[in-house]
Length: 378
Image 1 (cartoon, one colour):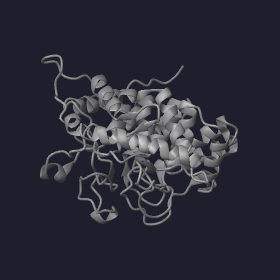
Image 2 (image 1 turned 180 degrees about the vertical axis):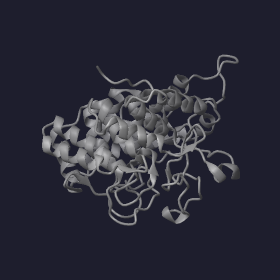
Image 3 (image 1 turned 60 degrees about the vertical axis):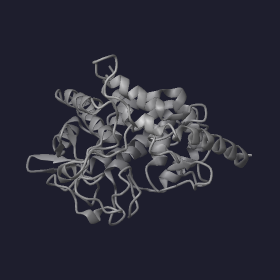
Image 4 (image 1 turned 45 degrees about the horizontal axis):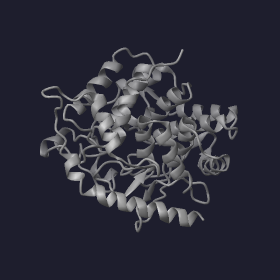
């Protein structure tokens, strides 16, 4: 029965995407102004980009951008539907939930007909659990399956990420050995809160996960930050994503406010944003730290990513940094001034070697419009 339904929606989506692919060039060439001489507002751009990548709302199919027309990725759909709203979110979540692996692992990517699905050992199952609380609609047996898969990665509250690449959102980064990746650990702590809400985890598991997340903080010479992992002291703009989701979805703070603010202030700047991954001194990493190899300032090797820039400043703002809100808005406004949302921006030497990447109308960045409006409850 599952196989028959699966084939049906895949074939239908393949037809829809074939029709929309021809329109892709027109979508990319979006003008920078509307209403005469008036520029686009951030809301205009976020709405347009998110909606043009909602290929099939009833099937829950959201593509990352017109440049990615062969599948739907769980992490991209999580962020994009966070902007589009809970009904679209439930449809998309159910699509991934119906395709959990037998061991409970959520798919990284569901593909159009004829292209294999992908199940990487990454954060997708963590996001699935968090998403189930954010938008609801998942049966308890699926949540139990997913929680068991996640729990197999955990030792004393620490979520262990395997060696290699394709284990986090910055999937080109290569972990030299099994490690506690800060991004994944923060998401795990938020996922434990989700599991607690449905009776799958207890207070002790929450405390252990939060303690392991906090233990990653490194303080030195009067300042400190959350590094990319337990074993690596690189700077990572996405180290606070779990903190943001815990505060905005569960109204819980995983970290002390001072640790959040110091982490954001220690991030290396890149234009209006941050460089996503750098060494401890704020410099790009060697090319061989990535697979495929990346030039310095390119993609995950020090590129600037709008979504993670805004989420980092949102974490700082909610922790009490009075300058962070304005910084987040400036980063968003500098992005939408072109009338689109780009996947990322090259920085440093890479920015001078060529124009910005062609991947425009990148849907998950629409979540930045939601993030800058968040306020602590109470």
